[in-house]
Length: 586
Image 1 (cartoon, rainbow, N blue to C red):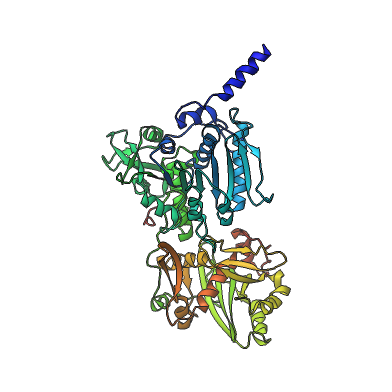
Image 2: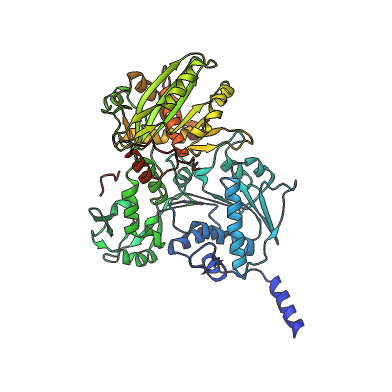
């Protein structure tokens, strides 16, 4: 009897994989582990995910692009799709993530899914690259391999070929001196006639790679069926409405018949929905655009999203996050330059000696030149940035005078209108291109306890605004200048969340408006950059960026700080913590 069972199992192993639709195979064979979901167990696809499965299976479709919001189950679907290739269509596979940490985390998630699924358990085996290094993760299985690679280290791509390339969160990829990781990855598929190239990402800016790829595709949108008129329409943010200041009343207004559709009908609408290509003449490239509004996720209820929007619209940065992650739309960046005279006219009646009562912290940004240092003092409320003052200390950078003057400024205290006093809570000093590094380090090192830190600006829109350098033994902080300037420009452009004090001279605004954000085509590819306006200097803009960035060093609650500023006692210095069109709606 035992021999018969062994024989049957051996013969079963020789049979080809069952020829069932990918969606059906996922729902019958893939199990979600408890570590990945509050509802573990057999995976149930959401209706719109079945369209993605059909595109993966279609032999006429070579490229699949998914421009997505959050909370739409993409990561679990991607894991299940990779499992399908491992189990049913073995071949070399590359899963490309933005960073090595992302690749490592994704490999752990995928391994948990394999362990939770009886049909998949034991299929993957440990492997290593040719040199035995741990710079990437690798798995082997009968007939193929699965490599987890980081776009940040594109040189690893040169040593691999793949039939199925899965690129995740591509708007987070950085172009390095080694080239564009997307292009490099795609060249690794050229060996295979039946290759599949999957790219998925939450969009960031309108010039980003996921937006460009979607524009090159057949541009599918998901249309839901109205339970009243039974016509099909895409659910967009303007069609989600609620009573003033009452997001709990959020509902969908059908653009075809104008009927009010309550949240309870959403599952029915989505189940009866369909994908429709807006550019059907494009062949071989299926593109899907999907937002969070049709997600069955419990945190994607219209009432919850309405409440999130009311909070997000208070500042351009949070509104951008809402636009990217909830609406699945890129943030538009056109026309971001300013007139210095218009900015000068925006000055308000406040200063260091006449602080707005809502001021909670003050930071300083220091730009270093050979013959001077320029300082911008920035106040921070719970939501706004206040440019309070601009100081210039003249003298040779390697002399003592300017550093003594700067130290005196950093020790000053001002009367707060709520009764207490306020000092400069953190200061970022630019170390430049390295020529002033030792001088700046010599000034900052004994003042680390006062959160006076040396910084270096680094380019890249996907860089964190503020993070400590990873170089061993180097006490240096990196400022993502492009990301910080984007935040500044967004607030200035909307005249929201940034205010200018009356003490600021005209030269401050001349330098603050010294750059414009543009999109240039480099080797046929659009790239955003900040360009200096000819004949202008940019010291106050740079110092403002540093003052904004160093706010990340201050980790204190708003309520506790407000209490301190209302007392006569000098506020305690909080611990340093490093944290790596609808605005009128109410």
